[in-house]
Length: 301
Length: 301
Image: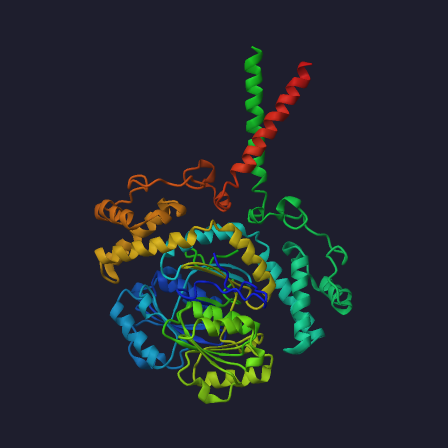
């Protein structure tokens, strides 16, 4: 397994041996953009949800008789952001002012025609089920507030991506999204206190934030409310140190990670939050106890 | 936690409550494309690796004195795909024939100028450390062959993304990339046998492949070599069924998942491969047995 952004010491710039065969995974920004979706079936409904979640406006072109119930719901739910036309794609004029185009049709030749028109106008385009025509692919996704995880198999196995999604979801504790939201808030407050883009102040901010995220348990970051953030900036940033949550009057959660000596191993860190080791240990304990009891009782007879 | 592509029954089209605040995560395709990278420092070197891995050609603009050792290595390693100019960005002509532009400069005003030129020409652009200027963000990444996982915090916490990367890496078994590669190969062979895009044959292929991925353990998919694939197509696809690996003469790996009745719960499926449930159960069993034995021995005295 190789890590695309592994850190490397300048003296030994190790390079991944496999510089090919992957995609460039990116988080595309759609706020204030308009996306054309051609098709209204089940696949289209998934696209519509993803694009709406990314704050885009949407134009849907699809005959009403083929609309999936979810597509209908999105049209009803978001009249301010979704414009629906009960017809097929009619020609190049449909692409006017579009920032992205997604087709989800059961008709490859129509998709191909739309993709060619998009190429001429440099509009990013995805045609569902026809990877050769796509500027980009979608993958299975996990979302928890500001946290988004995409699992891409580079077109090789959508079902495996879905299976991995369940596996990885289970490895999360459920508090990560909230931790990220709070850290984002802290970063904003810090930028107000020590403004500037680039240069020394930017580096110092980045270093201090990193140190905080390294030293605090992720679950404890969820306790960064307004008052705690203010104290953290006063007693931490201003004095060039990273106080603990306890220093700031907070109560650390029961640790799964850093404070628990068992969890220093990489393997155990991956056990999902919520006592999943407790159950097998307990079951084993009971089974062992009962077995020995039965064995001894049998011997005594 | 919400799942962007959760399946929904048509009769009850449940809709995620939070249709905003996220990015559109996509796997961008760069094969045959050219990417301009402005800057050659540490951040640029990470961009260069990601873009080279996605099979793009690269033009780097950066004064030689600021090159990171890894940037230098990439320039040396891939002379056929990397063109390097020892100078700064000079103006709009640099964008000629570029499909994407990434800046990684310690100078926000230069970045801003480059981004504006890109916008005029509809070239997707990312300016490191200036989220407001970006068409797309990067995230922490895990790669294992054709498997790529991106962790995005929507700009709120790059350090948390890195921490989550270690956590999620640990939840993987290390065989997933190989399983995906083999499944991709099977899909290719299946398409040769039953060609066609869209329509009934496409749906039947998709259904059969899904069924296979659901019924086989992921680790067993790594055993899909050329001969096994041929038998699987003959004895499975042609007869409209999914034989097990054992049916095909293969030897299933020791199961952590489907064959173990304990593991039918969603939670236990997430425990990483490698005996992590076996160990706690065994320890519990021994502890339970010893406790009861001691207790009974104590009573007998």
